[in-house]
Figure 1 (cartoon, rainbow, N blue to C red):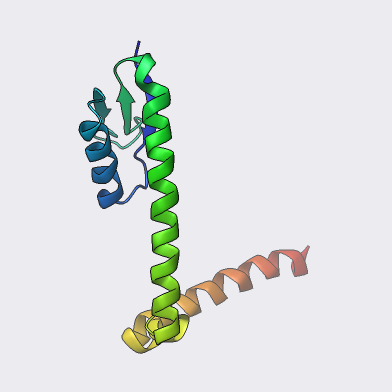
Figure 2 (figure 1 turned 90 degrees about the vertical axis):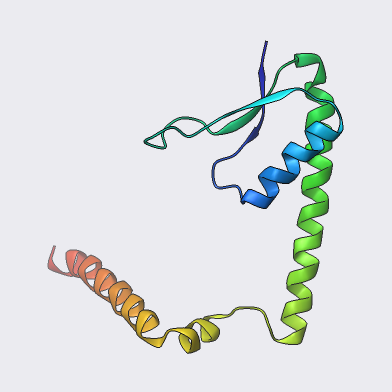
Length: 119
C-alpha cells in the first residue's frame, strides 16, 4: 500500500527536485500526485512500498536539516555583507508599489478600527 512521504504544496521546485533525486539515488520507488486543475488535490510524493517508508523519511529528514542549516548560513552571510533583503531594499526597488501596499494596509486598519469606534 502506498504511503505519503512528502507534501509538495508551497515547496520550492529545487527542494522538490532534490527529494526526487534522493529517492531515485537510493532506489526507493515513488510516484507523485499533482494539485489538479483547481489546485484542491494533494500535491505529494508517495512511496510505493511501505517497507521503504522509514528509510525514505529518514533520508528526507536529513536532507531538510542540512538544507535548513545551509539556507540559514547563506542568509547570515548575506546579512553580514549587507545584501539581505530588508524593508528598505523593497522601498528602494519599487517605491510606488511599497507606498501603494502601505496605503492599502492603512486603509484596511482604518476600516477595521472604525467598526470598533462606531459600535
